[in-house]
Every structure is written in C-alpha cells, then in structure tokens.
Image (tube, rainbow, N blue to C red; front, side, top):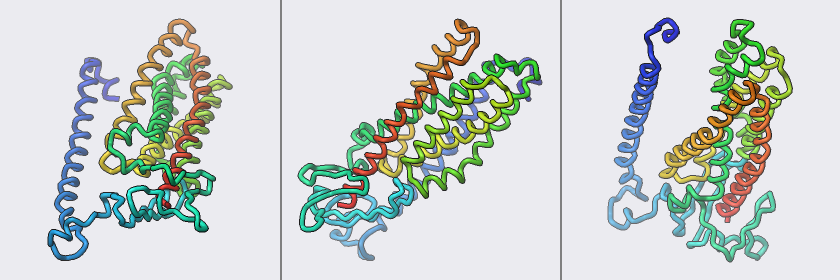
Length: 328
C-alpha cells in the first residue's frame, strides 16, 4: 500500500528497504545465537561425570561429543522416521561389531535393511563436516528441497501473469488478491505437519510434500477456471508450509549440531541456484515465445515432481541404515 501510494518510491529504494529489513532481522538472529553459543561454552566445563574437577574426570567423554569409546549414547527423537526412542549402545570403534542376534552377528531393521558387520559404517553425525554435507542422504534431501523451493519461487513470481492470462484482469485482479491473502495462511498447516511427522515419520512427510506439489500442478494444468484456481491457492499454502518445515526439521535427525547451520545454508543455496538456472529462462520463453501461456511451464514442474519420489526413497533408506547402525 505504501509503495502504491508513493509514486516517487523507486525500485532501488524498495530494494534498499528490503536489504535493510534483512540486515536487521539477520543481525538480531545472529546476536541471539552468539549469546546462546557463549552460554553453552560457559556451561560445558560443568558437564563432568561427578562434582570433582580432577584431571581424570575432565578426560571423561561427554554425552554431546557423540564419541564411540565404550560409552552408551541415548538418542531420543520421536520424529526420526517414526522410529520412536532410538537407543545407541556401542562398544569399540566399529558401530556394528557388537550386534548379535541369536548368537550370530547381524544388523537389521524392520525394513529388511542389513548392515554387514564386517564393513565399517560411521553414523553421519560423527563424520567430519565436509563428509556430512557430502553424504548421500544430505545430497538427496538437498536435491529434493532445491526442486520444491524452485517450484515455490516459480509460483510466487508468475501467479500474477498466470491469472492475468486466465482473465483475472477483467475482475480487477480479484483472484490475485485472494492468492496474496491465502499465502500467509500457510501457518495453519503446522499442526498437520506435526501430526504427520509424529504418526508416520519424515519419509511420509517428504512424500506428502510431493503429493501437494503434484496437486498444485494438476490444478494449474487441468483447469482454466479462475474459481477452481482458488482450490490450488489453498493447496499451495499448505505446500509451502510443508516444504520448509519438514525439510529443515529433518536435518537435525542425521546431521551433527556443528554442521546443522551449514546444512541449512547449503539447502537455501542449492534452491537459489536451481531457481536461477531454471526459472529465468523458463519465464522468458513463456512470456516472449509462448504468448504468456503457462501450460508448458506448469506441466514441466508437475512432471518434475516424479523424480523426487526416488529422492524420498534415498532419504528413507538412509534413515534405515542410520537406525541399524545406532541400534548395533
């Protein structure tokens, strides 16, 4: 409203306003995290085995270090692949060398995922930071998020022209206003996110993101009725909520705490790169060569949801392998 009512408000001024808001918000967030980190570092020396501060006590491995040196590590995560409380009991350097079932060494899960005890498997959170970010599970999740973030960006940036092509200009951009008002309603999807993760786990949660992406795409490519598009607006609100909340909450279940921030940053980076590579050329073709007909572009994003099913399966199998290693 302010921009519309102020004719002299130039694009550089608008960009500067957004940049200032970004610096303000990120500056406050960074300050808060620095204070939390300082508090954590101050409390760390107090986390010893007993009340004494002798040298031997200080040498004892701490719970949060996640070291496999004869200690028992309890990992509680009710969301991690719907696995309930995970108990990790390991002795020795190999996480699979003490798993015995019926007198025989064996590591299995409910999904019939087996880990050969003769082969060493290191839990992702215990690997060096670079190897955590290069793990198959993280790369699959990053590819999944990059596609859906690019899809979200495409919808946000092209909805005005898409609705205009369908005739929204004749109604005074009424349906564009409905879309704009429904976008913040995505926060109402959070309770549903919580229910799905508690009951079914992250694998089903990721598949649900795919399902919502397909539903949004189907509405766009199968109907030119503006009233039907309102249904797509509601689905998009939930789609957007699910993409960000499920993906980012999935990271702490397998990444180490010191790598978590880098992992979130790389997710955003990959999504931005893919959006830049795909959306700009696609919008140019749509606007300049296809007469503002978004059918082909929306169809491509609809088809793109199908390979994401395979990425979900890679993440699911990664959870199964991690669980088997933790339980061994």
